[in-house]
Length: 328
Image: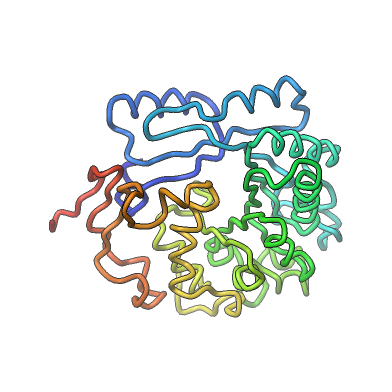
């Protein structure tokens, strides 16, 4: 957590409440040693009964000064690389044909219950069929329960054209991790992810630009510990889409790159919007939280290939420094 603060992070979205993590956050928070503001979303797994869903609802808002439970994390599928994503057409090995939920309609029902209770959901959906089903579930929940909370889809690695506009239409946030594209796939599509999908699906990789242009709110994150957490590296990847280990290599889908301003918004104001906190977080403004980062260069003008190496001079959480460079 201290290393995360030193990378410039002032907060994070914790996508589970497993083990003794909540007790650990409480202990650090009460001792004044929690260096990040944390938003925790406990899991809802297949087989969760009505009592289990009620318990998830009851846990909302529980927390301390710098952390709280807000939302629920749900898995709709696995990953393309190991054949457990949910695709509308199988991959080249005949895999990735099924949802993580044995009965996807039960997922839809639970999303509806959480929606009516005002609980936002964050659903892991990588394959095109998984993403489509999440959007269908939110559409049904909104039709039956009104606008409700802001839901989001995590990952969105490959989707067809007709899916893009639905994010904006339904108010679903697109939460994406561009470094997955940068570091785990290749521009020539010779990597496992691309070979499994084949053309044209491998050409619809991490459509950050298309989602943004369709009106969706695009949020950037790391998916740590799967990928590195430093936010400057995440923003850089959204701009250059090149392997961080070798920036001389060709970008994967350069037409899907974001601008410097769009990438910065994805890590700040859009992340606050996804949490329903845009009136108190995400920007430096009167009345907003004193959570801020001081960098050694302007992230809007630094070349994308140099952004990850910009020094973080100061990180401030709730008005108190959590990181200070030795030069200050």
